[in-house]
Image 1 (cartoon, rainbow, N blue to C red):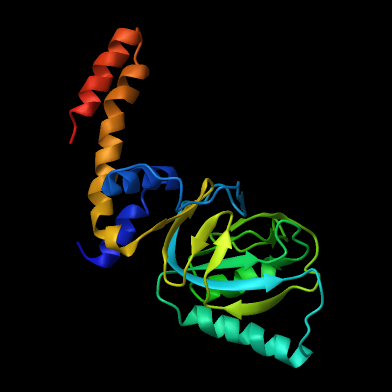
Image 2 (cartoon, helix red, strand yellow):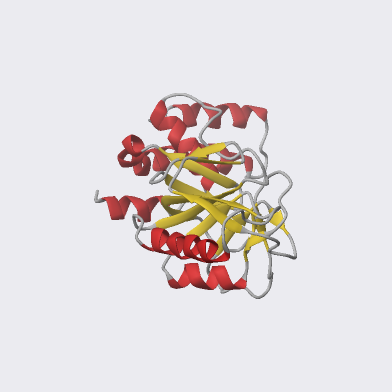
Length: 231
């Protein structure tokens, strides 16, 4: 299966199912590789976002220690960086003020810019604003909502970041939705479509039995055994 086809296939599943499938590929459960805090979605109705990470760090609680000209230069360098990153791209931004985030980098303007640059979506521990004014179809999975941008400015690009306990390196493959985000190691990507089919197939006998009239513990045990036989 081509890489583009794999990405399209995994986009059909939610992030919890992706986490289950990755465990099937790895052959073990894990407590790393996914976010540990609740995200706040710009639009809860949107499907998952899938793409390769373009990373940055921001700060808003205090004024920049560089000149206004340098602040603008850094912002344009950021836009240049994300527009030239591996496609499809998810922008992952760590707000270094977390957990006391002060200013929102994400609002009507930045959402319009990022959507126009063909970015698939955003993952951040920072703040979001302009609810109800954001361009339709662009997902921001944020840490919260706030009214002001304060002193928000970009402080660095293309480095390892941490969002809600998930360490993200530039180029990591991110799958994210209203539940949070997870990373698929590139060595596991090829195996994910089959693993997704497997974990969903193994749940089907149990779900079917549980939703039928007359469900009881004996039928649960029978369905459970049936599920275990699916390989």
